[in-house]
Length: 195
Image 1: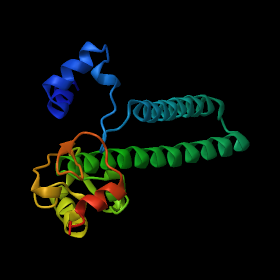
Image 2: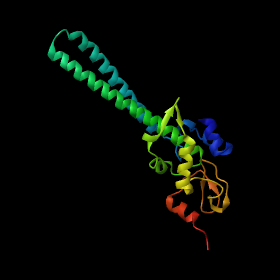
Image 3: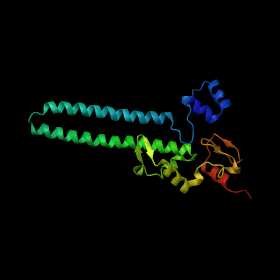
Image 4: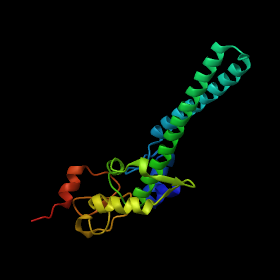
């Protein structure tokens, strides 16, 4: 994280951050980086799900031992097993969607996408296919998104004043580039030709 932060904000500003006693892991970078609190929240949900699954597996084992010809217990066992299987498939799909979302979000950021959340809302994750923990056809997804929403990607052509913008930087109305976020109104003003 510290190398990524140093690359993103420059060595001088990075040294000032370190001198101020701020840890690089405490910094929430704008434009698509996931805040630590949200990551912790997601990890807590996944941990809770894992604990539920462990609990269900334990209940299934206990019920299996108790079921010795009792029709009522056998029915309870079958219901519990069905519930476990359905919840497991729901959680597997949830984990897969989180992985897809993270991979697509990362690809968008690397391509210089602005307003990543807005662009993510246009991508149907059900149509995204994961192969060996990678997105199949990610370049097609990015090129289609760029084709439809090209002005939401930072490039030399669409930066104000022709300033070269790299991912993680924001063009300002005065033609400079910075790390601070820009509101949509400022972005529109910066893109409007001056008379």
